[in-house]
Amino acid sequence: MTPDRIVSIVKDTPHTPPRRGRQLYDFILQTPAPRCLELGFAHGVGTVWMAGAAEELNGKVIGVDILSAKERLPAAAQLVAEAGLDRFVELHFDPISYTWHLQRNLDDYAAEPFDFIFIDGAHTWDADGFTFFLCEKVLKPGGWILFDDLDWNYRGSAAAMSNPQVQALTDEEKDLQQVRAVWEKLVLPHPAFGNFTEDDGWGWAQKSLSADAPKVFRVTHTQRLSIADRVVRKLKATF
Ligand SMILES: C[S@@+](CC[C@H](N)C(=O)[O-])C[C@H]1O[C@@H](n2cnc3c(N)ncnc32)[C@H](O)[C@@H]1O
Image (cartoon, rainbow, N blue to C red; front, side):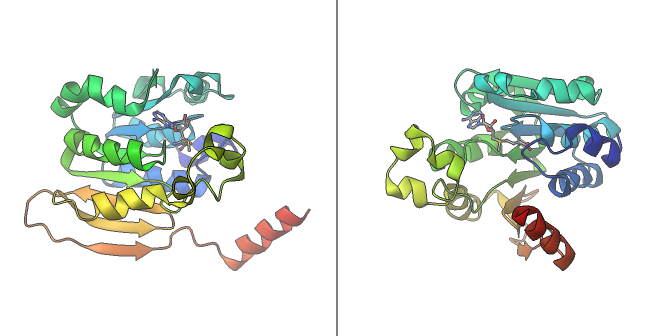
């Protein structure tokens, strides 16, 4: 499926914007990474971008979210169906969490491991720290893991802070960039990972093919807006 067709289907549905979606698409095609896992799919925007590329490789995207994702409008299944990508997508709605989905499917996924795992769900130390170790078990050597929202915290999200459950958290929980804590304290020092790239809130890491693979760390800014984009964004915010 072409990127233009994907844009025409996902339109401005939250959460992954077209520039980011295109990055996922290109990465999957170019790597190539036919077997993908998406942890947290929400409306299925990332799923459609990933599956659009997986289709070209005759691959598959397995997505996991919680039960309440069924109530989202548009629903992920609807977006995937509109794109005609059902054959390349499997959506799981877990009653607890993707950590529990991984618990139940660990042996099967380890037997048929993933080329690429996109972690874009809980954004918490507890859930995503543990998820990272589970993912290591179901990722191919040479496979890639991607964390979204390295710099996100509850405090900076008006939507999150309006939730009484979030208001009841400690200041430490509200202030910490929890995905970054997972990235810096668990992923970067992990002996099985290397080839790290930080890219405007995204963190990429490759599961090494051998124990002596070099530990490279890069910082890029593929999402940095051009001056024209910044002016347009400012005008949109003003009017
Ligand atoms: C930012 S959205 C995902 C966006 C999506 N990846 C995209 O590209 O459009 C985060 C999703 O993670 C889900 N989520 C949060 N914690 C989760 C957990 N522990 N297990 C499963 N899903 C979870 C939420 O329900 C929500 O739909």
